[in-house]
Length: 70
Image (cartoon, rainbow, N blue to C red; front, side, top):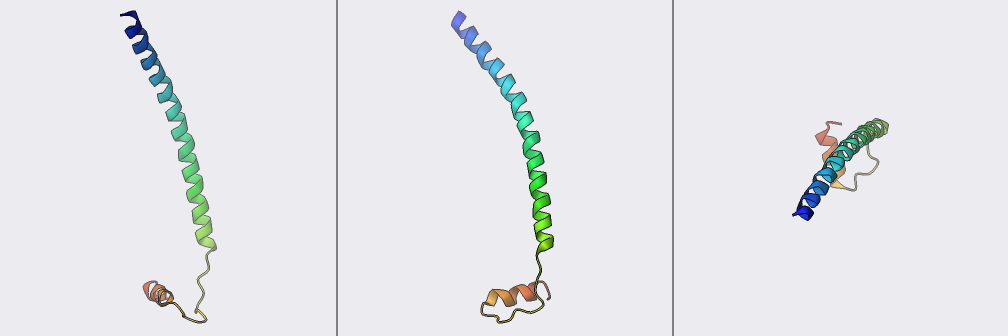
């Protein structure tokens, strides 16, 4: 009987510690996601869409121009 209670105590104390560490990890992950989003926004703002494509060899270029009305 004693072993079962020790095992139970070990399992419950371990889960408490893991819950606290997972909360800390979530905060770090949230910050990294926000930083990643900020980087994506900055990269998007750097993109320059040309007025005209020199040679429209690919149909997707024309489709993009029509889609975004350029």
